[in-house]
Amino acid sequence: MAIRVGRIEIQNDIKSEEYLQVNCCGIYEKVTELPKVIRPNGRKDYQLMLFSKGSAIYKYRNRKIVLSGGEMIIIPPDEPNDYIYEGTVDALWIHFSGTAIEHILDAYHIEPYTKYIVSNPGHFFVYAEKIIKELQLKRAGYMNNCNGYLLQLLTLAKRRIDA
Image 1: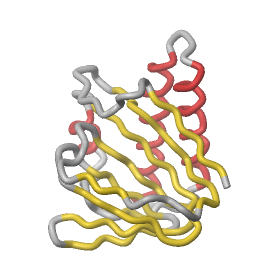
Image 2: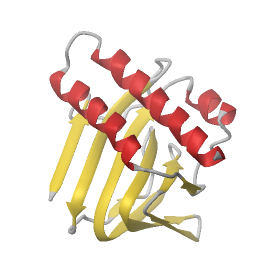
Image 3: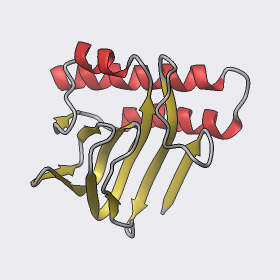
Image 4: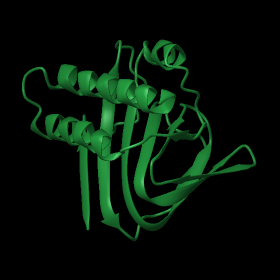
């Protein structure tokens, strides 16, 4: 069982005025005991969740969305949300914000709270690993690298969704 996390700071629920900013990123591998997440007021940033194994049940405006292996969802800021994980989970999550996010998601036709199927989810974990490492080491230019990896991940998602 492994949980890897990288954050820009302890308090990472941030709405950035930068063009793009990764606030935190994490990977769960073979994790069986994850807490239920309840956010009555949501967060200030977006969250991308992608599963390669296991699942989660999201509640959104009296709707249930079940996300399983090979599926991705974007949770928008300031929206109440809660979810619970099921089974042995292999998943990644990235919290991000910035002035360009809406434009990027619109250009890629990625809608919040829509479940997307992405083939070969393992490739996404490579980008998440790189983001986590950058956030942990905080070397010169680390935020630029994090943002670049996020853009690459979103582009890969768009290509997989279209395929």
